[in-house]
Image (cartoon, rainbow, N blue to C red; front, side, top):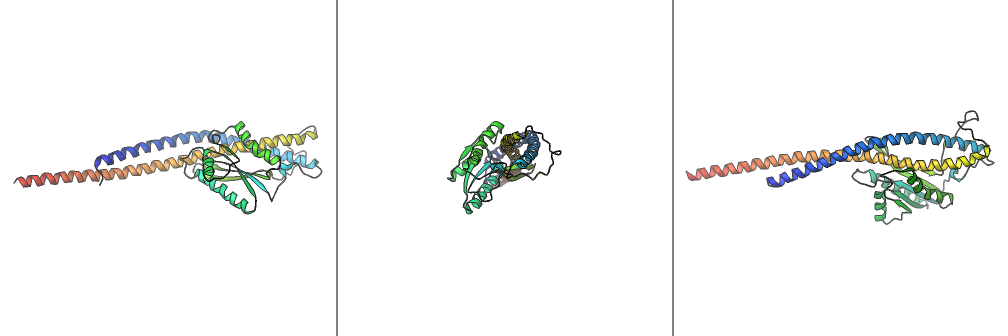
Length: 295
């Protein structure tokens, strides 16, 4: 059995760890509150921009000869090249948060590769960069400090490479993958085909349309500009949503670590008390034996 001094040092060490994990949980909780507010605002904007884009796409399609309103809206069921854009955290200590995204990306790579599709990877987040670099997989684009501090301009700059490749015909599809926030206890992997854009069919009349664009010839230009905003904002929202999920996952991980530390302190305390009791018993036996020997 370990001596009392060693056990006491272990108890102190575990208690310090417990204080650290508890503090990290509180920090993540505060950050989650702020990020959730931003995420809810962004979600409302994303919903509105989707509605507006659907409306304009519908209006433009009615005046096109063949109903084709641009490559960004033409579905491709047999893509030859696919860009997978995915988001991971820059930091760890958040349970299986990062591995859930990485496993999903690996599954998509296997599924697409089995069909003969060329897959290219673009990643935001140090953990994703480190994992695939260690695996020896080529990363077409990587950034390591964006997922921890989402910024609209930088998000737009990051996704711009994939958009230009799509417009140039170098890739046929762009898929966005991230681990998103569902609730305080749950994260959800979200997979979205960013390009080509798949929008719900809009059944509206001229009177029902929420937009009035004059002259009519400008609608295609408005659609192009709005499409860029749609893509940029979806990338930005994915970063915010991923950050909220990361804080949620870290809260759970740190709470579990704090509880485990508490249990470990309790078990070490019991062990300490037993060792102390054994030491006292041994000393008493020695004293009694010494007294008996003097008689």
